Length: 112
Length: 109
Image 1: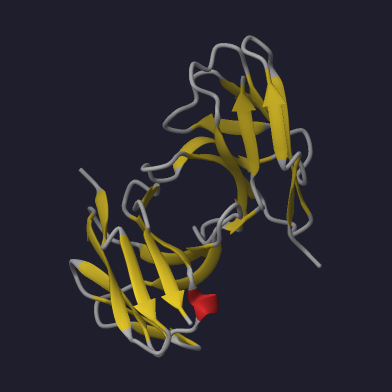
Image 2: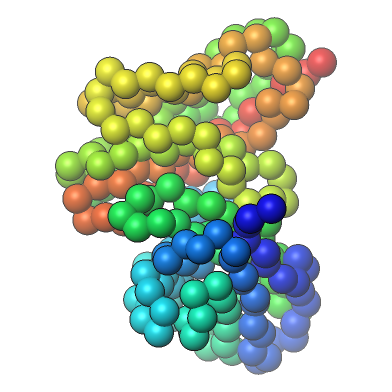
């Protein structure tokens, strides 16, 4: 079945450590997105990519980095510069120009 | 400023008790309004897209409607498995999705 796979599901890290969240899709979608979800806040866009080897900052890109070397993969690195990294991270994809998103199951990052 | 407001924040129903969730929006040039369902600890799942005022879409016990200012998600005779958070998002002229905070729905058996 086609879909988006995020890993790991749960991740614990110490302050000051960089972590990378994996996102892989087999839907052949051109566009991929990273969102952050916090209690009491709507989904906030971190980065998005419309095509391989190109990506754009979203609303809250500071402290994060991404790459898009393959159509299927869009990993997110949470760097030590991100002040409040503990959150639920969601990867999504779509077929432009549609904004109908298919989401992965999410990765919950806890920084101790 | 583009904005989406969902109400109520939380709703608890008895099985079979129909109700509606509201999504009020302000956006320049609505290109689409989206409803998603999210179960605890999982990613949102797409339900509906509405594009113009007067449009309606149905899926099982759910029916979504759209006016120029708001959308309603009507739930008819809900079952416990309909318990979830329902998210609304709008796409406007700036081509950026604006998300509401969601309505948490619980259905008692």
